[in-house]
Image (cartoon, rainbow, N blue to C red):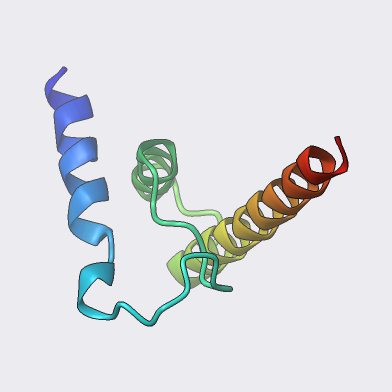
Length: 86
């Protein structure tokens, strides 16, 4: 429980403050926010024997979150078009 609370606190602290810029679109091209499983994966990989440099790990994480954001936008777009057709 303590580990989950720590991961949740890290996830909340890394979330960008979007309330300061009301003009920023909600569905921008930015990657999704760090999630608890993503943080757990990053920390776990850092504690294993190094097989890749840390910058590759971070590059992979950013790519993955960008891809997840694209998938989310496509899902929302498909749901909007399917609901407007009925």
